[in-house]
Image (cartoon, rainbow, N blue to C red; front, top):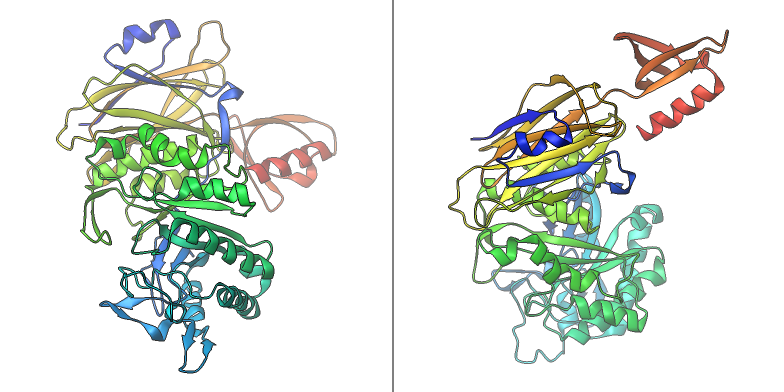
Length: 527
């Protein structure tokens, strides 16, 4: 059962009134030092494998797609799928066939947008005549071998880029990203050595940049603590050899009931920090998660899995989002459609908010509970958000835990605010109605404090939304210089919607002073 109790208290009364909470999360929105970057939405890219004629549409209008295996080198039932290759051996010579690649791009762009093209599987013709070192020609995902001729590969990549520019225009092709390799470190994706991949990467990025110097290029590896993690050495090698990359993607498939895979403080230190937080890391690059799912089980081949229960997924999503914001990581490429992903939708609603640093005091009452939260401020709507989660690697825990929130708001005591809560309840996120209240003082300060206590069930999250007063402005009329103090609401087509003592007014900004017009236009842009 989820219950939330709200108190407006002075600081001195805090411990008396909410003494049942063993963990208290705090945020001071009045302290500018706590303000971080604007929040991006991390779940906006979906992986799709070779969408030749159709693909499973993600949620949203014109979603971003990462196209996997677009160049060929694919297989079906352990047989080479030669007809979809873009580089073919016709019996006497090698020929290019860009039609399969363009079919996939056109299929995506009919309903979505290309975000990234993978340069992963090498077309089968590049396998001719190479020593397979006793390995199979057809691996789990098709052709996992390096190209037989690096010079021919260079020309092939250059011709591919030229064909894309001829077909789609330079401006559009520059907007796409190019990821060289997928899950490098697994035999199913790469049968060459580590150094062979690094050299293959350098050859490929140089070929791309010889045609399109501004193209964004990177690579994709396993997580840093895996048995064959090439990511840390890739970063060091690129620094040593002065090789360019704009991003590094990693895979992350945590089992929902294994503490070392879901405790994100441990996970960041073990799996992401050894790539991103080393001296050789390119500070202009981005670390991303290019494959992710919270899983219950995985097949022996590693190419299919069963998702964790929904409640675990939702709570973990909030926890993962906090890690991404705290460590300035970008993008989580999803499989599936994203349908009914409740925590993801809440993050989408906070896109563009300022992320605020908070703090945590105390330890959970229930052994193994990972309780924390994140805070944001939508300065345009003057809305303050807190998302609090409870996750445990033991799937059997069901006991609620009291959690306290202590929030300092940047407006005076006795300010009238509205608040509501959103609580994960099974398959739904239940929102309460907006309620009105007035804030109380903080001792020796001009700001307000809001104290809350919630009963947070296992494997769940709750969101609190606090709507502060509308921003105010004293406006000056151009004709007579008279002044009026208003609450700003919206600027549209040169007309300001505002409120004076609760009554609604629409004012053409052309009737206001030059200073007011300049201020309102800037305010509307930021809004």
